[in-house]
Structure formats: structure tokens, C-alpha cells
Image (cartoon, rainbow, N blue to C red; front, side, top):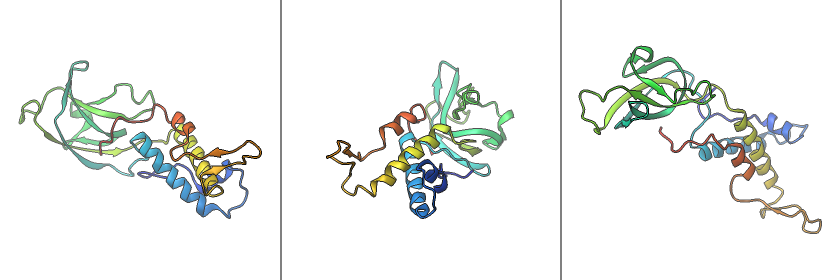
Length: 200
């Protein structure tokens, strides 16, 4: 997988639309990419994964969480701790804790990392530079993201036959205005996957 991938292929969207030829593959590929990036924006995250571990620097003050008793720092999504380093130390021996606790079992990424103590070179509340190395991202694209990409890609594909934003026929009672936002069913499909804010 790659970072910010397309969540479908043009052929998969064509199959969803019951298109049996490849004449429109180039245009369908455009809609797939557009729908994929719209999903990223709606969810405030992407669903790909880096091919190899990469270092990212977080310059902010950890916040004390009385529930866990840890100083917590919000980080980018990560599901694979293979090769993960915390300030140059392997994650397994760093003493750091990835949160939420049950993320792997729930099929979601870790979004935060906790430390038992504030860095000794700083005072609580002071910004600290943390360098974390990991294969950032998701190990697999959630099924609902694929479904949402099909829905939105299909809607935008139909848009070319309704240049004024209206599909159907008023004579037959099937007139429908194509909204200038994500399909409502796409938003419903993606419910639960949106992140509060983007970190990196």
C-alpha cells in the first residue's frame, strides 16, 4: 500500500456501475482519485500506509491524562509497530504506551502515545520535540472506505450527464438535484472513522 492511495481502481468502479467496456476508464480513474481525497478530507485522515518506517517530529507539550496516569501526545495514525522508534529507542523498550489500549482489537489505529513522566529537561507544559519513527498509516483500507468511494465515484460519474446539477426528468417525477457536497450516504458510511483533527 502507499500513502494516500486511491481506494478503488477504475475497473472496480466500472464493475460497480455495471460498465462492461473500458472506454471510460480514464475518466473513472479521475473520479476515483477525487472521491478518495474527498474521503480523506471528510475523515481528517488518510487510509494508506508508508512502505517503510519514517521519522516524524512532534513539537508540542504532552497533556496529563488522569485516566491513564500518563503524559499523552497526539500522533499520526499507526497500526504497525515493526521498526518503531521513540526518540531513537525501540518502542518495546522505550517505556512509552500507544493509545487507545484496545486499538488493534478494534481494527483502528493508535492515535496517541503516553509517557509515565514529563521529560526531565523540561517543565510540565513546555513544548518538547519528540521524534517518532514508524510505518505511519493503516495496514488495510476499511471496507466502509471502499464502499464510500464507490458511492461518491458513482455520483460524480453521473454528474457529467447533468451539467446543471439536476438529474432525472421532472415529467417523470424523478428529478433530483445533485448536491454540492459528499453524498449523504457516504457520510453515513464513514461515520465513526472521522478523526477530530489532522496531526501531520
